[in-house]
Image 1 (cartoon, rainbow, N blue to C red):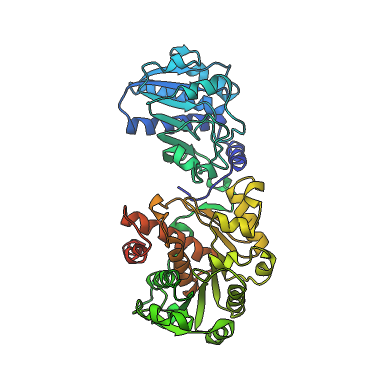
Image 2 (tube, rainbow, N blue to C red):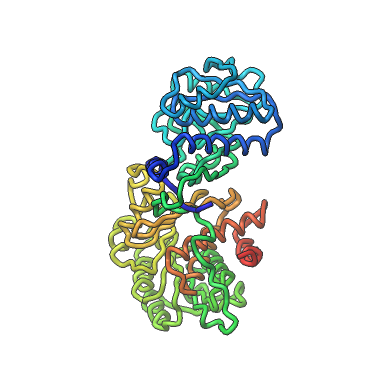
Amino acid sequence: MSDEILTTAQMAKADAFAVAQGTPSLTLMENAGRAVATAIAARFKPCVVTVLCGPGNNGGDGFVVARLLDEEGFTVRLAHDADPKGDAAAMSARWKGARLALTPAALDGARLVVDALFGAGLSRPLEGTAAQMVEALHDVPVVAIDMPSGVSGDSGAPLGGVYVTAALTVTFFRKKPGHLLLPGRALCGEIVLADIGIPGAAADTQLFENTPALWTYPHPKATGHKYDRGHAVAVSGGATATGAARLAARGALRVGAGLVTVASPPGALAVNAAHLTAIMLKPFEGAAGLADMLDDKRLNAVVIGPGLGVGGETCALVDVALKSGAAVVLDADALTSYRDDPEALFNRLHDRCVLTPHAGEFERLFPGLLDEAADKVAAVCAAAARAGAVVLLKGGDTVIAAPGGKATINANAPPTLATAGAGDVLAGFIAGLLAQNLPAFEAAACATWLHGAAADAFGPGLIAEDLPEILPQVLDLL
């Protein structure tokens, strides 16, 4: 299936497009219900199942599921309390089994519940009988149709205090942002994406799930050599703050940069030298010294910020890096140093820059934007447009956006990545890919996916130093 992601409004247009192209809406509903029933039959043995149907199209899907599960040998109880509307009324008429009131009593004895109350397009908190039913769901697996009821399909956020936590969610044609953004992704459980007959041309979007289909890893060429694969520079902090730059440098080297140098203040040379082998080491003193180093245009990517400290000296180093013509990854202190004047940073950025803030750093550069925007994706897209550069907002649901509006949600990061130094390695991965001439958006997306895949491959007990070392296992699969 496609990696395109549609908002709920875009999905409604896709449905309308399919109908305009000649697919009856009842056929789409039948196909959707069949996809849910098929997914259930593949995962659960026949048992007592209660199907909770709302009045709209999600409920119509539920009537189809009830009918098809009955044919598969499940003992089906169907509960609804409102007259179905539109296509749902037609599907309701095809259900010949018993009907129950939408009350908690309908759950008695159920070994499985199908949530067909509301889909991804719900924009208000659950209330009334629907809320009572959801509150009564305890210790029974729930299969959600399209989106767990009470969870926004666009933001993944609960719409109120009452919402469904599903074991399985079956959605149609394309995923919605809420399937990938947290906490929605966790509330969906396993996600199945089903083809229900909507033409691919109906998907009109600049938002994608981050997978290898979105970028191409730059495998070495048989005729190439290390100088073809770029030379990345990681700028080190002082003697007591060198580890972050070395983590970034190791990441850049492992991800394929042909050469990597740690640029070190003189006072940190000894500690850096004690830890480096394949990575080179070169001293610099202040902004003028870094400028002299970067006059060598073979040094074509710079990662700056980790361990540098916050203040004017860091701003001066950032300014040098941005003027050098190299691709630049700005992380950590390189971002926070501009918290009092973000525009001074934005005015210096170019199309080979990637900003990699976590939520706190994002707030310092783009105050209020996360609260003002409709959702996380909208916030990051607005930030990228404002900065004029690629912005990567780190988290369990990292979002990456380019100034032109293209964006991606990364969903492969395990919780073990919440460990000190992991972000420094990610910055190094990006710099290493930029050194190999990947465009900024693709470098950021590729690095983020590799970062998550490496953490997943390592498993429990992960620390930042493990990420570059496990990366070859992941690259071998690409």
